[in-house]
Image 1 (cartoon, rainbow, N blue to C red):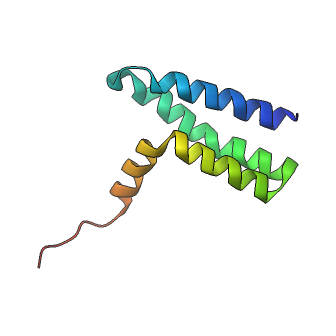
Image 2: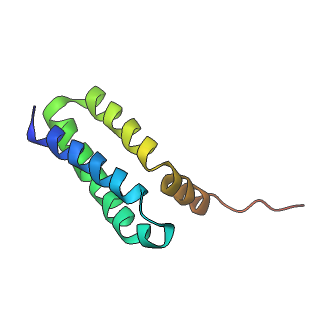
Length: 82
């Protein structure tokens, strides 16, 4: 197994550990994990190709679905009730 995939496995374990923390203590570690994810996915893409990187990206989104949903909510324009 390559170093990139081993690092991705550690990322998943760290994300699982952050998920069991109380909500008020999750913010800092979750932001660090969200910032590390694209770098790890890029490394996986370089070493193993886009298909494996896409599968890993889906796994990362599955693990971090609530923060990803919050980011999407902030990026979307507010609906006007006209």
